[in-house]
Each structure stands twice: as C-alpha cells, then as structure tokens.
Image 1 (cartoon, rainbow, N blue to C red):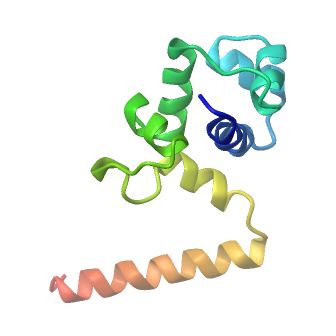
Image 2: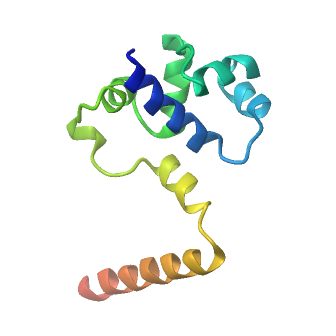
Length: 117
C-alpha cells in the first residue's frame, strides 16, 4: 500500500471511529489501540484479516476497499456504503439533520405517491 492509500485508509478509520475511543474501536477490529494509532498515522497498514474487518465496518468488500484506497472504482462501489453514510450524518448539527430527514421524508412521500400508494 502506498502513502496515498494509507492516507485514505487513515481518513476512513477516523470516520469509522467517530467519537469512539481508539481502544474501543480497536476491540471491534481485534487489535490493540497502538495498532489503530499506527494505521491512523499512516506508519503501518493492517494485515488482510484486519483489513477485511475494516472493510465490513465501512460497507465494502475487501476488493472494493482496496480499489477505493488505490483510487480505482468498481461497479459495486457506486453510492455511499450505509455505515459510512451513518458516520457522516452523525456529525450533522441538529438543524442540518432536521433538513436532511425532512428532505428524505419528502422524497419517500413523492416515491410512494408516484407508485400510487
């Protein structure tokens, strides 16, 4: 994995971890907090087993995650993985969240109406 890929992985890990402590996040993956620190600082990279767990948390397959980190796209990786979407929306202010949920609700109503329900 080159430096750019490790930097993308670092950002992904920070996004996935969110407000969780490194220790708690590390337990989810089955590593030490020190390993997470090294990954976030781009000093080292996870082995395949742990990369697989990270991919699952992010809503990717291992191949999709590697393609994402390398800047390649795959047909399967279109859209935002659900786990990442949740992470991103958890950072919204209450007003931003209300606007988002209102927009989603309006869209669902429109879809239901167009389907004749």
